[in-house]
Image 1 (cartoon, rainbow, N blue to C red):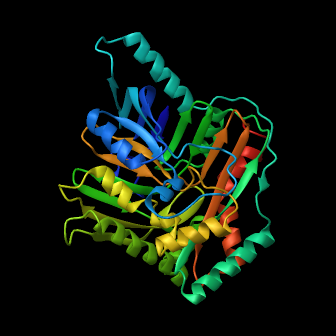
Image 2 (tube, rainbow, N blue to C red; image 1 turned 90 degrees about the vertical axis):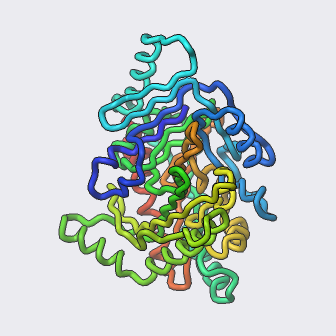
Image 3 (cartoon, rainbow, N blue to C red; image 1 turned 180 degrees about the vertical axis):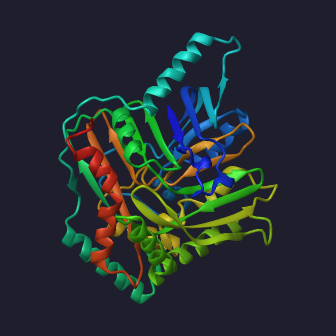
Length: 412
């Protein structure tokens, strides 16, 4: 099951609404599942070409090892497959006030469709039920985090990298939760335009992502990386000041612009010559917990290039790696303590016409119900101007909604 919810972003002034297609999109039940162990992008390309249908799924961060001479050997408590896609029996498309249902069976079963709509409504509309609070731990101490930032800045000083996205894990063991209920509470607290609920058997992703990785609309590709974060103000005047300070902050702008350059380079690999354009640089957008600095880069895909190749050539997204990308990913493996898995990957959909839209998996809870292991990771861009204490505080800011949902008297 995959439920992708934009939370009425098309009806809000503070949004890139021209690039949002649906209010809510859900794929239910699986006619076909693909979960390859190698040549994942090639495998996906073959299957989407054979069955020109809707596909829902994700790309895990560790697919990087197929694309470059890299490895992932850190602790993995969730054990998500590196890729999972499924062809759904039912697709529900909500666009403003219209619900469109695509279904596989030739015979129309009105009662079954109604039952499925009610099931989806139960996910979106909260139900009160008490669950005990959780004991959430940090995988590394604050001192270890600060020490790693210092070491990464030394790599920057030596010229190994210009910027690196460094992340840490928060986790809970032997933890029974109700994933749907937890997701509903997270969406109440932090509704975002690229949120999703994704279930594969006993494994779940509960995502409140504000970031788009890549969208294809005809031959147009759109990437909207986030780099730059500020907390919300206590009142309207303070909130406006926070936005203005974020827009003017030289460190935050440098972070964003470096990743914009990386994305431009990634898109150019599959683009028509001279078609890569920065439509917006360092725009400021507001979300329930934070303000974010977002840029928009577009390109035109060459007609002889398969759309899966456009994903392969730009994955993983630069906002979650750093620059230069390969060197940054090697240092991520060295200094982080947890295998990212689905975190820093992308969840989304592919249409029968070969269009697609994928988010960046951040502000997200991963949960393995069989192991009763819960995990979420947060991080930020490290540059030469980074203040380790401020970077740590930014990590805590990004955990705010997830911590509140999981710890404040449990999930009710």
